[in-house]
Image (cartoon, rainbow, N blue to C red; front, side, top):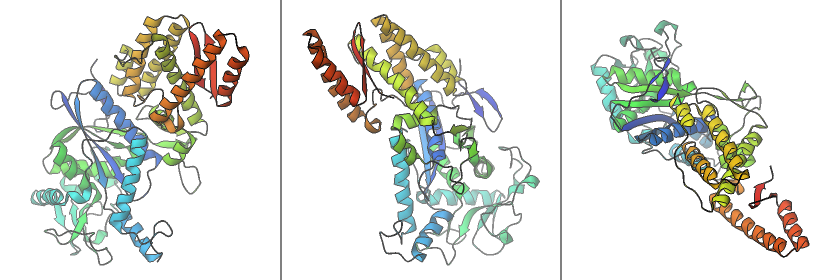
Amino acid sequence: MSMRFYDTRQAKVRDFTPLVPGRAGLYYCGATVQGMPHVGHVRSAIAFDILTRWLEYRGLAVTVVRNVTDIDDKILEKSAASFAEGFEPGEHDRGREEWFALAYRFEQEFLRAYDTLGVKRPAYEPRATGHIPEMHELIADLVERGHAYPALDDSGDVYFDVRSWDGYGSLTRQKVDDLQDAPDADPRGKRDPRDFALWKGSKPSDPAGASWPSPWGRGRPGWHLECSAMAGKYLGSAFDIHGGGLDLRFPHHENELAQSTAAGHDFANFWMHNGMVTYEGEKMSKSIGNTISPAEMLGLAPARVVRYFLGQAHYRSQLDYKPTSLEEAAAAVERIDTFVRNARALTGHDGAATGVPGAFGAAMDDDLNVPQALAVLHETVRSGNTALAASDAGRAAEALGEVLAMTAVLGLDTVGTAGPGGDPAAAAALESLVAAQLEARAAARASRDWAAADAIRDSLAAAGVVVEDSADGARWTLEP
């Protein structure tokens, strides 16, 4: 079965054929580093990480580019507010913070969240501030082609003329006259209030260093322009997939598509968008207090459990968080880990990932159907447990190889890491300590020292380790 993905632009699932045989280029929108990452950011990153892993499993060399927007109105506003409050350095959320320092600090927070949740580093993660020349080239090309113009009020802004491009609105299937005004600049300098800013002229209130010289005067890039310039530089004028959250379709991705195609680029062959995260069916909102951050999730559960929860739904669907969600995800992860641990014990070796079952591959090929793929994973675990109960080492080893292959595709491949925080080193230490205790218990039972054996079992139970005896020896799990 060929891979098929839903293309937002064509509003249908269609066959995926790489533009360059054996290779795939993926650009997905990263962080605007004006604050801490929220759960929507990490859900999107995990969705496209799973996509990357699947493309690689299917034999493609994948080049992933994920941008960092490190110059933006909100970044400047937050920096200015820290100065206006007049706090000394180190006080009140690191007061008096330069805009570039604020952006870099939050960029590191995003990287920490991505790394903690097992999101693979992209081939490149370009910053907007590092690509001003490429943006100037793109603007000049659009002006020359008649699709952009300097502001009419001498502000130094440059706008994209949405009525000059017949394809404007094609991504979201909207007509220009039905669209809202672009809120990114004072409309007095625009031909049409829907025109959006490619370049923003410097203002007296802007901090030093937050503007660059250009043919249109000092200023800084518009948000939409940045992604077009960076995607084109690293993936070429045509590439396979552009991804991002559903909330970015309009205006951000619509504007990216318009300015890139108006400049003569084919741009993305597929547009893929992940759904939003809700809280008990409602949109998350700080004002009503129904939010949960990645940091809060990681305080409640190990990283692999959080990743399982955030990656378990179909990427295009809404993912609903409930107070019990992480408990349910933890139970699912523990079932997988328990089987892997016991299968390794029965087969006498660590095992190695082999290949995914055909049903798993068919589900992933069908628009990345992770829920169906997870059903295959858990069915394989059940089948493997049946083999364990029958002491069928051959079938258990086969199931183990398949489970390891599937968990690798889903980014859950640090199997057996049920230790604190999901840390592999901590899990390895835990496994070694428990194994030593079980060996001592087995020796006590062999010498019929039942009191010592029971004492070891009780000690492990007090630490949350549940021991179950079987014909093949003792097996253990962590207490739910």
